[in-house]
Image 1 (cartoon, helix red, strand yellow):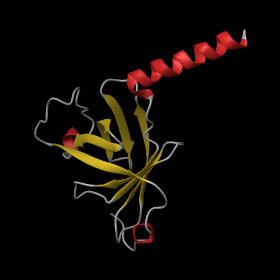
Image 2 (image 1 turned 90 degrees about the vertical axis):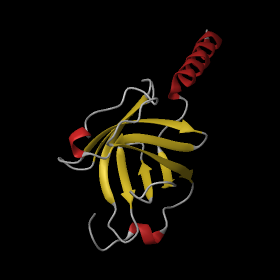
Image 3 (image 1 turned 60 degrees about the horizontal axis):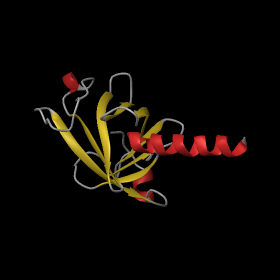
Image 4 (image 1 turned 30 degrees about the horizontal axis):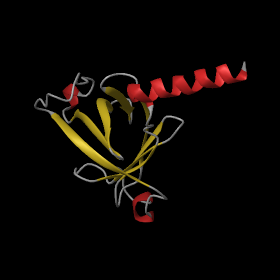
Length: 142
């Protein structure tokens, strides 16, 4: 009986991996191609922290759905600053496409094939270890 349960559990894990659920967004990433933010960290308890050199870390919350296609990401940095995005992984890089226009902030794209005006793609490389100290202690707010 235990063997049947274990086989079922393994098959479920394989199916979940095939649906995009194999990689978790949880982790630390360095921005590699955008002027917005230098590091971002997504924690397992739904916290998102953006680190910019010389600024205080900007904290918010997020929810990610790795089952949807494309995978969806909602971030809330304040009551007024909310973003609906799509994301994917290319190797260990996290790629996020979101609006750069406040009027479109809650409009999530439905695919990766379109890039309408007012949207930007950001690429983050996964990093290990700690966020560098000069990014963790800023003196001004973003």
